[in-house]
Length: 131
Image 1 (cartoon, rainbow, N blue to C red):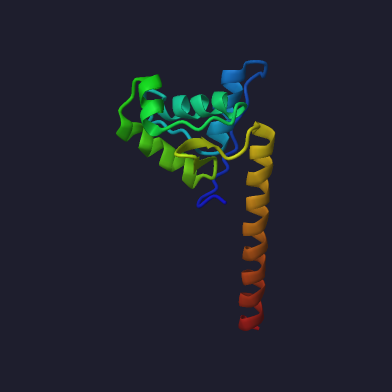
Image 2 (cartoon, rainbow, N blue to C red):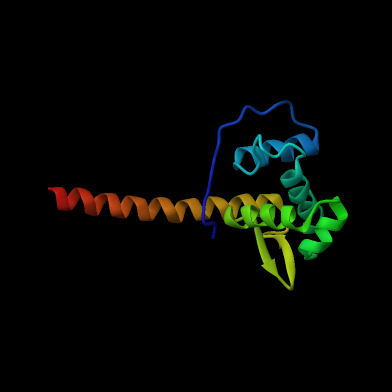
């Protein structure tokens, strides 16, 4: 489950371009920000998306080498993606939580349902206690 789930309503441009759609999806999940000048987080995300079909885990060193980034930069972005519930650490490397984007979004949707159920329960307890 994600530690932090962010949903941002972002205007979607015309579909039909996979990279643009992935950028929109990541922006909608609050994964990428203006400080990421060289799109390194997006590049890490795309690398993991491409490997998701083969369910192949990548090490932070491997990602850094593929993308010509420092390991520190890659680890920073992997941590952010793990906190968002997008990436998991398994088999000595990192991979997307699910092997398809549809399943990934469905998992995030379930995570939000769990969180909102708990929020509703606590809100009811507060209201009941306040009379």
